[in-house]
Image (cartoon, rainbow, N blue to C red; front, side, top):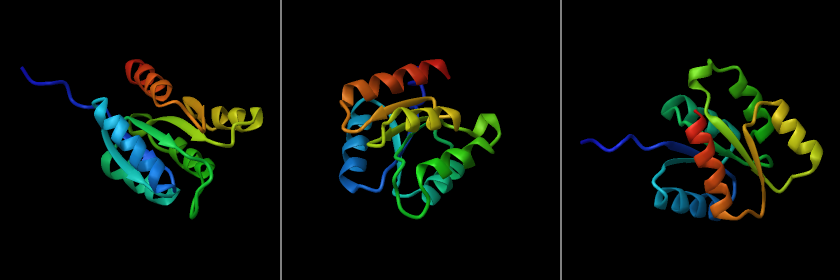
Length: 127
């Protein structure tokens, strides 16, 4: 019997250590991963690989996470990944803005990897 297809996650963060650590943790948990270091690259990855889930930082060069969320809203529903904003900007205003722009969840930095994986598994089941 074939194994079920892996859920794919796009990790978007401009800090290489954060990207490496997230990819390592996600792959160890059975996810397939892709990575982007800025918003423009993230949108290219979404178009090319159609990930089911995305971990999105807000403060990045070239194009920030807010702009990425706005662009993703324009995609047809079947092509949009479920988005978890992962950011040090975690004020109530930032959380409200993320929700307003269509983010499915918000995890503040620094984060606990197991908590983050729990959020991803809940979104994976809900999609």
